[in-house]
Image (tube, rainbow, N blue to C red; front, side, top):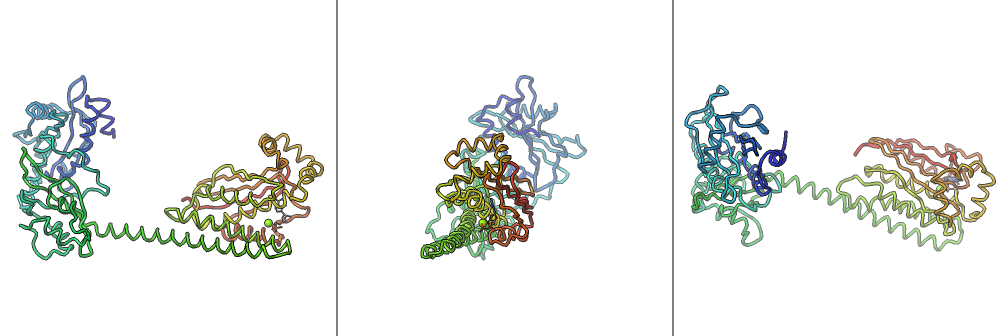
Length: 524
Ligand SMILES: Nc1ncnc2c1ncn2[C@@H]1O[C@H](COP(=O)(O)OP(=O)(O)O)[C@@H](O)[C@H]1O
Ligand SMILES: [Mg+2]
C-alpha cells in the first residue's frame, strides 16, 4: 500500500509542512475514530486533474467498520466529492442529510475540514455505520461529545497539537480507559476501565465529581513534593502524558485539552494501566544489568589470576616452567577478553570479530621479538553466543600460539625460512607465485616473509576458521589424533567435545601449516 508521503508527493500540491501536519493528525486519529465509533478517510485534492485522493484511512476499535475495502490510493466518487467540496469551501463540518445505502447498510457521512495555518489542506470523511448505532448510554454520549469537540478542533486548526512530543510507548486508547473532565478539571465521566485503574492506584472513592489533579497527586507515591508535569496532565491543561505510581500500580495518563471556538470545554484523559509492562521492563533491565555485572567481575577475577601466575613465573628459573606459566597466563587472558566483551553486550551474544582482533593482538605481542609476525584476519566471525565464544577464543589463542612458536621458532629465525626454502623447495616456489603470500612477504620483510593468517567464513549456522602460516611446517610423523601435548589436547577437546565441530591440522599447499576448525553455530 502506498504511503501518505508517496501519495502526497506524487499526486497532490501539499507542502512539506502540510504533509507534516497530516502525519501528526493520522498518528493520533485513532482517538477520533474510536470516540466517533466511525471510519475515517483522509482526502486531499489531486494536483492538475482535480478530484480527491484518499491518503489514509482508520477504522474504529470501538465498533464495526463501514468500509470493508481499503480505499487508500483511490479517488473519491461523485457523491463523496460533493461532500468534500462543501466541507472545504464552507470551512465547516458538513453532514449529508440522508444516509448512504451503497453497500447495503445505512452509513452516515460527514466532511471535517483539516485546517493548518488558516487554510483547509485536506478533508476527513467520517463514515458511521448506523445499523450498529447503540442505545445512547452515558458512555456513548460522552464519547460522541468528545468526538465532536475533537472534530471541531481539527476544523479550527487546533488539533493535532503543534509540537506535542511523540509518545515513547503507544498512546493509551479509548478502550484502555477514558475520563472526561469539565472546565474546572472535575471528572464528569469515567469509563469502567479508567475507574478500575484508579482503584488499583488506591482510590477508594468515586471519581465522578472529583478534581482529578488533586486526587491523582494524593495517590502518587512520587518523592518529588510537587510532580508538576503530572499535575498539569491530570488537570487536563496541557497536551502531554505522565505516569502515576501508587499502591504498587503504574498508570499512564494522556491529556487532550479540548478548546473549541476559543473556549475551554474541558479535557479528555486517556488512562492506561501499565503496571505489568513496567514491571516486565524493570525485570528485564535488572536481569541484563546483573548478568553484565557478573561478566565484569569474572573478567576482573581472571585478570587477577593471570597477574598471580605472571608473578610466579618471574620467580622461576627453569625456562620450561616459566614458559608453561606464561602459556597459562595467555589462556586465562583470552577467556578474560570474552567476559570483558560480554560485560558490554546487551545480551548473551557477542560480536566475535572484536574478540578475534584482540586475541590476535595478544598472541602477536608474545611472539618472539625477532620474529614479530602480525596475524592478519580476513572474513568475519559474526555474532556468537557466549557458550561458543569462550571456547573459540581459547582455540584461536592456541592455534596462533603454535604457529608463532613452532612455525617461526625464534632460535632458528634466519634459518627457519631459509631452511624452508631448501627443504621445502616446492612450497617456497608456490609461495612466490601466490599473490597474497608475496604481498605479505614484501610488506613484512622484517619478519622474513612470515605469513600468519586467520580466515573466517561464516554462514548462518556454520563457521569455518582457518589459521594458516607459511612457517617450517609440521614435524615428521605429526599425528593430530595421537598428539598428547597439552595445547592440541585443549584445542581438540574444545572443538570436538564442547563445540561439536571438526578439527584438521595439515601441511599448507604453499608450505607451512594450516589448522581448520569447522563449527556448527546457531544463528543468532
Ligand atoms: N603451526 C605449526 N607449525 C609447526 N608445528 C606445529 C604447528 N602447530 C603445532 N605444531 C606441532 O605440534 C606440536 C604440539 O603442539 P601443542 O599441542 O600446542 O603443544 P606445544 O605447543 O606445547 O608444543 C608442537 O610441538 C609442534 O611440533
Ligand atoms: Mg601449543
